[in-house]
Image (cartoon, rainbow, N blue to C red; front, side):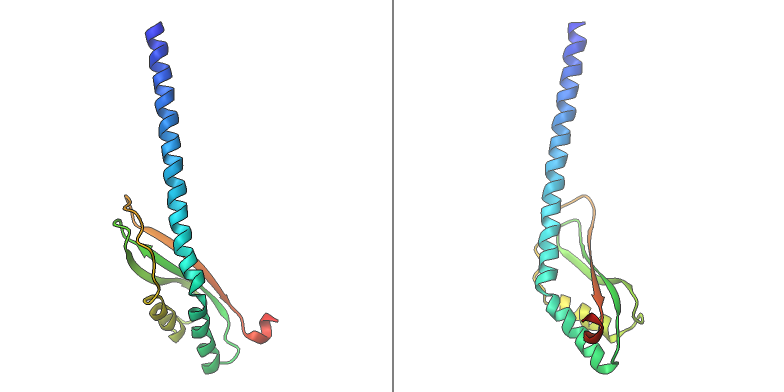
Length: 131
């Protein structure tokens, strides 16, 4: 009976340890994704410059874009993409935004079991409508 109790206690300890380790890894992953989001925030003016150019071409332009930043298993930036958009699919705005992301200095993330995707929304409204 005592041996069974020891096994149960050991199992409980191992499960608790694994849970704590997973929670720590999850917090680290969250911190890494926060670093990526901060790069996007630090460079959002480049995105809004692209939008300003779109307004010059077509006044009254407004809409939303969901930007995707994907990192491979090695933690390196693999691609940026427009995941969702209310603009035309081959919009010059899309091309401008994606071109701008190439110059952003994203951190290399730790290796992981799978690719990671950071999604970041942009909501564009003309200056007159934003007031």
